[in-house]
Length: 373
Image (cartoon, rainbow, N blue to C red; front, top):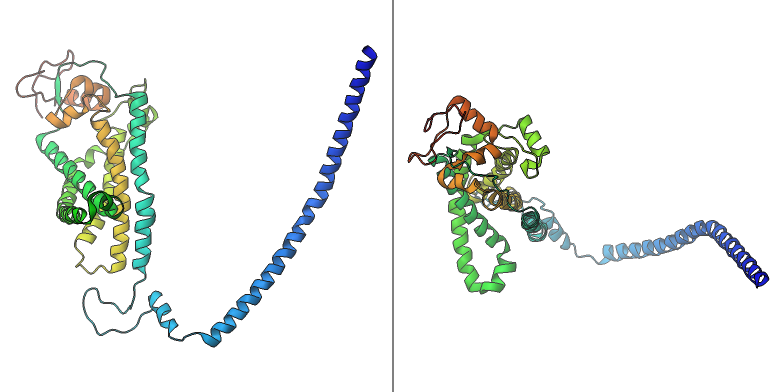
């Protein structure tokens, strides 16, 4: 039994050695033969290229003999070749056809309407996922003492801008996606009524919204100058984790939102004015570029606005109270804007509600109840 087992083991080893030798032989032969396949490929490609060149030569010969000379007129028109016209007016040019219109349509109906909207969808998915995993940022406790954060004119400016933004977003997206989304839902007649209303609302509210954004930038730019505290705020995840993140009146996230409004929002507003008031010498090319910028950056603005709205409502307990009433709980101010609260106390500028609710100052604050700036 032992001898049989030994013989079986030896046969297995010999078979294993033969398999290894054959494998090495195949690998060596393959390593030498494989590079030669490149010569075969090149030979086939050369033959195909030669045949293709012969076909192209024959095609050129046929074209030279049979081409209609008038076909060049159409090619010149599509190439925006200039001619001469006796017509006059702000939009009259020497071009028979501006091919940029076709390029604009392909970009608008292609990447702008087909790809960029996914940024808005991803924003909503990210917010939903964050809320499901992390939940709202709740206060540890409430002090019962109120601190004035937003004055009446500031809240009025914010709500006017916010409501205008929502109307412009809805009407703008309706005009952009109406053909693909709304016509199948409402039909041609229903969409035409809504599209006409959307166009009027968008065109008339847009300039007023632009003026409000400009006032908002001027009013709050001094509170949104970046500093080292903002870097530390981002490093600590905005206080969403266990680490406390200090901030002045505006934290790092609010400053990013503000400067996006300055740059991205400014681009949307300027291009909107170009589209809304076309009688200032801008040609069709400028209008087409403005339209693409307006739609693209506008959708990025909407995507970021989703996050801003979430953080200011369901995402952060006590934040909405400030923009609704003007006052925030002192504990909220300490948790989210402690440097700002310390500055108010140090300068004696804490303002309490006029009805006296929550007017008792915290111990050691050094600020009398109801003191005003």
